[in-house]
Image (cartoon, rainbow, N blue to C red):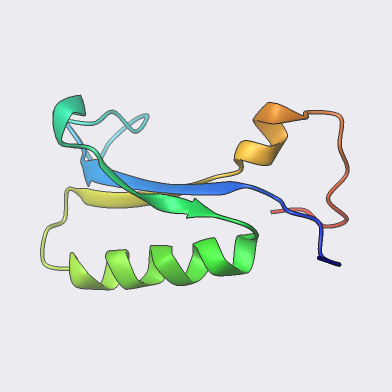
Length: 80
């Protein structure tokens, strides 16, 4: 494998409010979409989920840069 794995998670759910920080309405209903080896794969998954829930204004999906949590000093070569 020539590409370095940069773990990204995609999660989503209904937010309590559209104002202020993102807080999920019910943590037991958070949708863990999946874990992806790079930002581009995570972005594709995020887009699919975001588009499928466009009718619910409180539903939001997020990309978590998990590789930064696991190795905060590692340089991925680009900023997001």
